[in-house]
Image (cartoon, rainbow, N blue to C red; front, top):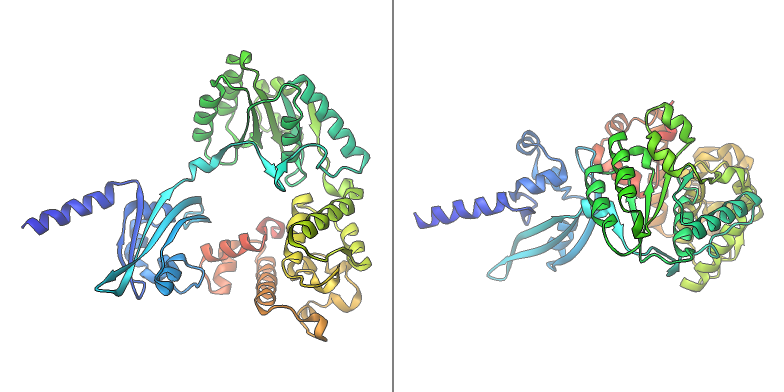
Length: 442
């Protein structure tokens, strides 16, 4: 009887706590999988009853953390994980996973997961890039339009007036915002980024908390048009209630604010708050003279940090880069450089054969004739084409997924079904390979 009472108590504790708990045996079968863990991973009660344990924890995937703990019999502590769950929600949690032993024999593993998704919505810290404060001196600006942007941003830093930054994703708006913060004549103590594409209730609570502080803070509301009109009005009201604190307010939008007002995506009162100063950051396709200086700076940092020998792009790759429209702007370029430099060994020049397959696919009409046939992307003709097998397999996988998404007009569910994998698994791979399904939507 006492054992039965204890069992009920343990079950109550497991289900009522705010910690996700998962226990599996050595074969990956679920022993405990509490409500909080199901919420984190987007598993409904019906799904829980129907799914096999292996399917839920992706046990056969060698990247599964619990799989590694069972294999190594060593605990995994403070592991941070961000992923899209089965309800297509972005979730971040920190987990501790421990092997379970009975009389020195491994019998399973237990995972304790703490949800930190809301904490990720706001970063309360001075931002850094490349190990140093991101000042205007660090930003690569050769083109006349970007020099003009920085000049206007410096004026904003002097006046400390609210400013609205306008531009596409990846253009470097966040860098301009940080540059303004670090260039303030009377420095602020902190830089707070509000990622407005996420939970607005959390954003408003955090904004209300920090704006009442005595210390001076620079707020950067990234893509503020994603907040509801009501939330935008509340931000205006809170900012106007605390004018004496010396806070700095910076916001960004993805397109013309007048169009956003007409679409009822932007509050008129919020626009009036920023209407004194607005700065347009042009996309990379309108300032291609910034491409090569950015790449040269990137290579310099790579040599300094990793001791590599990389010096430049080949003339063919340079021409391809200058002819490409860069829909993802500087961020797309930086991610591409990351991919290529990750697989170099002693190379001093980035040649066409180092371009990832998914990028070759995007620009295949611009490639030399011998490179245009997609079936030839993976042909090995000589020793110079050889590279580590794991990198090669990732390139093949990225190319295959890209082609599948193209054939299904960017429909993730249909693509996952055609590939014989789960939707979540496809989304995980797309995130790893920086593949955006929107580019395939017709």
